Image (cartoon, rainbow, N blue to C red; front, side, top):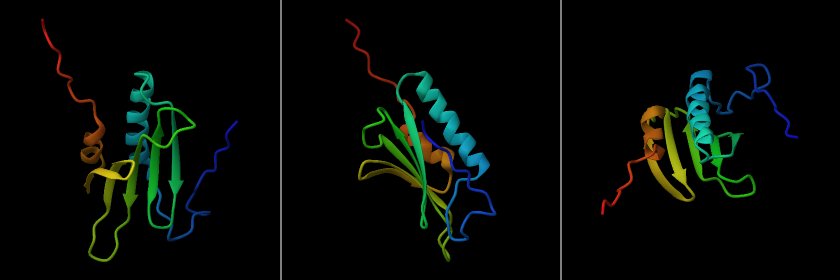
Length: 113
């Protein structure tokens, strides 16, 4: 059985990066759609000092299939998101929905005989 730790404004360190309610809604909607399709099975949220990471897994014991990262504003650099598959960054940008487009299902070529 897994345990859940709720991060609230009171118990969150000021420099910790988190996903807000709207970002979590977007991420969990995509996750639930992919679970229903049988593509994904598990997820993890890591709240680090320099970024927040939402990782999705095909099998629990594997490495993450995708990692969706949120990087905070720093100086003149705006808030940004990134989607990566292993060490390869698939897409980066300032819009979470736009960045998630990198992992949306693409049409497959079907050969007609």
